[in-house]
Amino acid sequence: MENAIYIGLSRQSALRRELSLVANNIANSSTTAFKREIALYSPYETDTKMDEKLDFVIDHGTIVIHQPGTLQPTQNTFDVAIEGPGFFTVDNGREQMYTRNGNFKLSPDNQLITGNGELVMDTDDNPIFIPQDGRKIEISPDGTISAGPEVLGILKVVEFDDLPRMQKRGGSTFETTEQPRPPERSKMLQGHLETSNVSAISELTRLIDIQRSYEAVKNMLDQEAERLRTSVRKLGTATAA
Image (cartoon, rainbow, N blue to C red; front, side):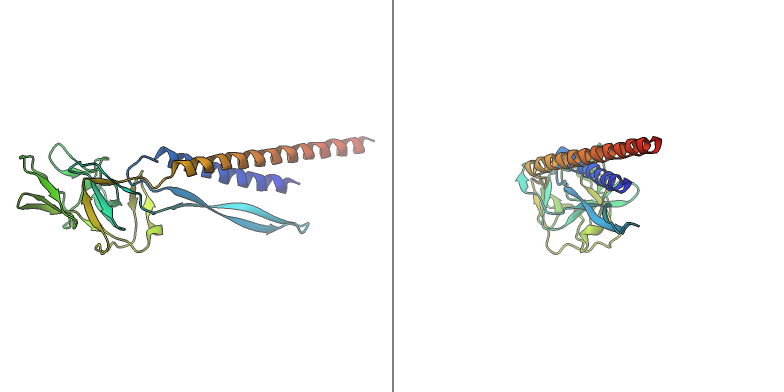
C-alpha cells in the first residue's frame, strides 16, 4: 500500500534536514564559540482502516547544545572568553543580541565591535570606545576595560535561566524573549577565545550513519514501488483474462 511510501518519504525528509544540520556543524567546527545543533524528531502513530499501526516521522526542529567549548589562549588584546554561562551583549543597529564569541576588534572610529560589525555594549547599553594613544588595554575578570587608571567601560555580560528559548541568528549569535539577568557565575579572560563545541570526528561518524539510513529508506521505497507496479500488472492481466 501507499502508506509505506508515505512513511518512507517522511523519514527521508527528516534525514535530509539532519544531514544539513550535521554538515553545518562540521563547517563551523573551527568557528569561535559555535554551538552544535541536533534535530528533534518524534514518531506519530496513526491508525488505518485495515488496523495497521503506522509511525510517521515528525520533525520538531532543532536543539542548540549549549555545552561550552574549551578556552584557548591567543594573547590578543581584544580577544575575550567567558568562563561560565554568560553571554556578551551586542547591538546590530536594530536590536540587542547575545554571543559568546569574544573575537572583538576596533571599528574605524575606535568602537569595540564583533567580527560581524555588531557593537559591543557596556553595562549602560552604550558602545565602548577604545583610544589609540599607546596605553595598554586591560580587561579584568568582571569585564572592566581600562587604559591605565582610566576605566573605558564594563562589558555587559548577562546570563539566562532558559537556554532552550534562545534562537540562533548566525554562527554564534542568539536572540531570546527571556529577560537577561546580571552574571553570577561568569568571569572574563582576556587574551582567550572559546572554541566550537563541535567534535568533527563525532559529526563525521553521524554523517555516515545518516547517509546509510537514507540509502536504506531509498531501497525500501524502490522495493515498494516495484511491488506496486507488479501488483498493477497482475491486476491488469487478471482483468484482461
